[in-house]
Length: 402
Picture 1 (cartoon, rainbow, N blue to C red):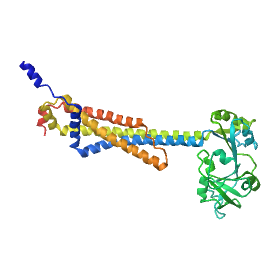
Picture 2 (tube, rainbow, N blue to C red; picture 1 turned 180 degrees about the vertical axis):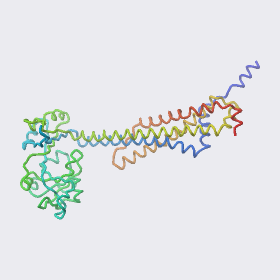
Picture 3 (cartoon, rainbow, N blue to C red; picture 1 turned 45 degrees about the horizontal axis):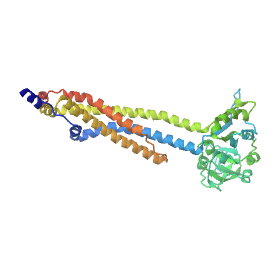
Picture 4 (cartoon, one colour; picture 1 turned 180 degrees about the horizontal axis):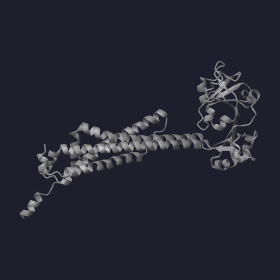
C-alpha cells in the first residue's frame, strides 16, 4: 500500500497545450531583442517567397485579362526569305486572297515605306527616333481592335492627302500630344490627324507613322506590296486558318511566307518572366535556410544561458520530455512569428505592386499555406537538437552552472 502511494506521489505532472504555450512564450518574452533578430531571417525568406509568387500570379492574371480583352484569334502574315536567303515580297493581291478564306472576318495590311518622319525640318534626317513610316488600309484599326486617343482615324478623304496617324510610341518620341500638329516627312509637311493608344498585339504599330494607301503610292512611290497582313477569324478556326494562310497568300512559294500568332508572344514573355520568378524563389529559400540556422543558434545559446532554470525545473519534477517539449515549442513559436510577419509583408508587397501597375492582386492560398508550413518545419528542425541537449542536462550539473 505504501509503495502504491509513493508511486502515485512520484508520477510527473502533465502539461496541457495551454501550459506548453505559456511556458514556451515565457522563454521568448525574456529575450525580446534576440527573438526579433532571429525571426527576421524567417520573415525575410517567407516575405520574399510569397511576394514573388504573388507578383508572378498577378502578372499572369493581368496577361489573361489582356488576352480576354484583345483576343487570341489574331494572326499576322509577313514575307520571309527565299531558299537563297533573299528577302521576298507578298503579292499585291494578298489581302483579297486572305479575305476569301471562309472563317476570316477581318483583314487589313500595312506596307513599309522608305521615308523618315521628324518633328520639324530642322532636325537631321538620321535622327528618326526609330519611327517607321507605313502605308495602311482603312480597316486596320478595326482589325486590331485599337482606339484613337486624340483626333480621328484615317478616312476615305484623308487617306489620299498628306495626313497621318501616329502610334503611341512614335507620338511620344516626336513630342506630339494632340491631333492637328504637323510633322516633317522626307520633304513635305504632314498633318497628324490622330494618335493611337497602345496596341499590345501589334507593338510595331506603336512605333509607326501611318499614312493612307493611296497617299503612299502617290507621294512616296509605294509599290503596293504589303509587308504585314493582320487577320482575325473565329477562335475555333484559328488553327485551321493558320495552316492554310501561307499557301493562300503565296500558292507558288508558301515557304516564303511567315505566319505567327501575336498572343503567343505575350505568353512567351510571361514564361520568360517565370524563369526569373524561380530564381527569386531560390533566393527566398536561401533566406529561409539562413533564418533556420539563426533560430537553431538562438535556441542553443538559450539552452546554455538557462541551465540553472532547466536544473530548477528538473529538480521540482519536470521530465526530460517536458523540457524537450518546452524548447521545441519555443523554436516553433519563434519560427511561426517570423512566418506570420513574412506572410503579411509578402502580401503587402504584392498589393502595392498590383496597385502601382493596375494589375489584379492575386496571392494564391497555397503560397500562404506553403510558407507557414515551411516555417513550422524549419522550427522543428532548428529546435530538435537544442531541445534534446536541454533535456539531457543533469539537474545537479545545471543547478551548479553559473
